[in-house]
Amino acid sequence: TIKPDQRAYLDTFLKRGGGIVVIHDAVCGTDPQWFKTIVGGAWEHRHSKWQEGEVGIYYLEKEHPITRGVSNFEFKDEIYYDLHLMPEARILASSFHSVFNIAPQMWVYEKGNYRAFVCLQGHEYASFNLPHFRALLLRGIAWAGKRDADLLVNKEELASLTYPEGGPTAPEK
Image 1 (cartoon, rainbow, N blue to C red):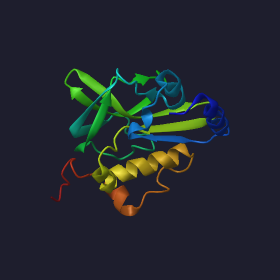
Image 2: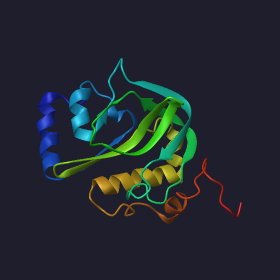
Image 3: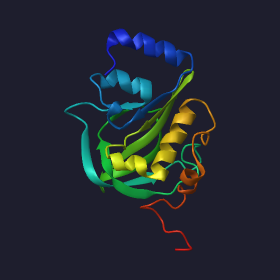
């Protein structure tokens, strides 16, 4: 929650071209109609929903610097759905609650001079130990900061994107 009297500080930072990264429940606040205009989407209490368990992440944007070269994968975490999204939010990856409910899980949003990157996963501590998940977050952080997306990613993390744990099997295996 960013209180109204603190929003001017964030606005100044973003107008200077600062980036913003939102991971997991940082998308939840007390003013979703305002926050969605800042990061492209927001959770609304008593409206939005969640589900824990095996989560499938399916990439829609294969050429974006954050998702370039990634493969779909499944892991134990949490999805959010029925969020408020801005039409300008560029959805990078989705998951599903049911065959009828496909929900964006990762997106980017550019407004004015700044960039926002949102990744809804991160509920499970173990998720951060997965090199492919870490690589996506690090790429998102670098991209939001207007840097080369691979700046913060190490060789192991980068190599894990094509054949991630929970994803397709490498041909040699």
